Image (cartoon, rainbow, N blue to C red; front, side):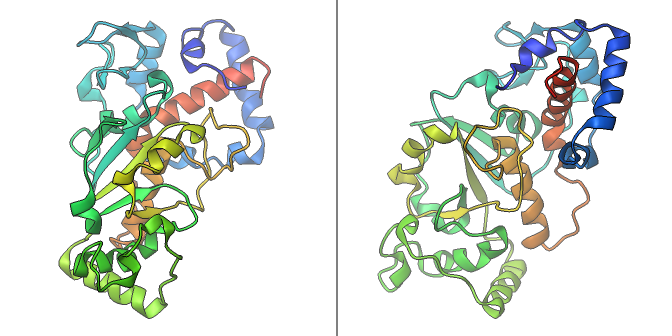
Length: 306
């Protein structure tokens, strides 16, 4: 059973100093290898002291709607009064991101707001069914979502090339006669892939935007089958495992939370498509996520549930 993070955040004093120290020491010694090897521990993050102070002071008002929130307002997409905007890192992304949020997705449980808070110039959140038309831009857009025809990040250049040359529905292109979701998957040859990447590097990256769905996995069908998303290239992050504390039972651990999907996509994109060494450029996208992860893990330990 997942724990409510807001409840845990408001009860940081329920154990007492000595019990907290004992719990943290026990957590370090007895935690399973999967937690000790947690990739979040290796992130290059801005100082989270501002979040520590906000946690101690408790909930605060949103400067726009005056709602009582912890850390940030998930309705207005701004930090609360006790978290100065100047102390929150800002991340510049190499492309734009559209997040399509399911109308029934609980605002307070969504990690989509993290992306908007930390990369405000490059992230837009839409509430379904109010989403843009993407048909004219299919050659420069990809949908990050697992599926039978999804491809890896390294294959993006190869699969988008036909859109750039002929358009998504050119009658001379046999592959474009039906929505991409229904096509047979085509594995690019190594020489073709290298040629596509080289071409894209010289002309600038063709991919200009990714779309991410913010929803529980059981609610995604309505969005993923929307006609406005048909024909888009789908990307799957198959080698990443989630650290999300609300991971849904019965789903593989490669099904990521929204902010994890965005972060890991960008890391892979930076290395596989931009062909640049990754030096933590996007780590601060997990600024809030990593802090809440550690907070909840420690609370679970102290409650005897770890």
